[in-house]
Length: 330
Ligand SMILES: [Mn+2]
Image (spheres, rainbow, N blue to C red):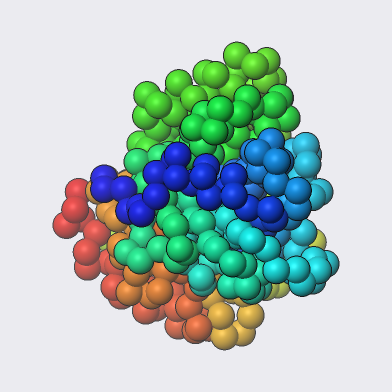
């Protein structure tokens, strides 16, 4: 994996040290890594003496992560003031499309620093440290603390642990490295309640999410001799289940877990003309590369895209393209 960077950890710390004010943002539909890395970076920025530290995201913190200490400091563009900052730090994404309305604050900032681990051809920002060798942006942010000589506080340890644990599927995905375990071990040594955190982020399921899962599984269909599985969540499902929009996240793993499956696809009807696609794969199928043709991106084993098509059309187009090529890479 080739790091795609024009700054190293020390250089990134140097940018932080010279800023008097900073806005920290991540991608829309934030996951545990986005939220955890944002909170840990805010702590680092304060430890480095930055007077004004603002956390901003296009979307509110998902209910799954609202318990994290400091999560309430993450503002949305509607509630945030319009202040120009010295530095914008973008973490866990490196493309404008994924910033949503939070991108305005990034564009206005005097300098932009990007810290990410997604595959990226052309990262945004004046300075970018993009390295897919990191399993989570949280690993990168933890090493940034080390490079700055800043001790990790207990509350920050929880944020970093959530970032790393969620992006590695609880240290089970193929992105998990010895470094992942070494960094996590240091966090556990600080006295984290691993079981309590795991219960919160992995095992707990609200009754409303269960209702969505029931519907998604009931609608699942197989293609390509079982190598492809796909399902959909409709607008009416969200309403009928009285679920939060973020509760769709993670349903796809139940599809991917079927033994025969190489590619799992979840279609989500955002409105009558827009469909969000989530893809999970294994056995060598690169989801991020495949979804590039639809303007999407992400990781090899977990990627997404948003298509300006009604759900059934989006499903047709995508399945036409994916079905002939599964099996080629296994
Ligand atoms: Mn991540």
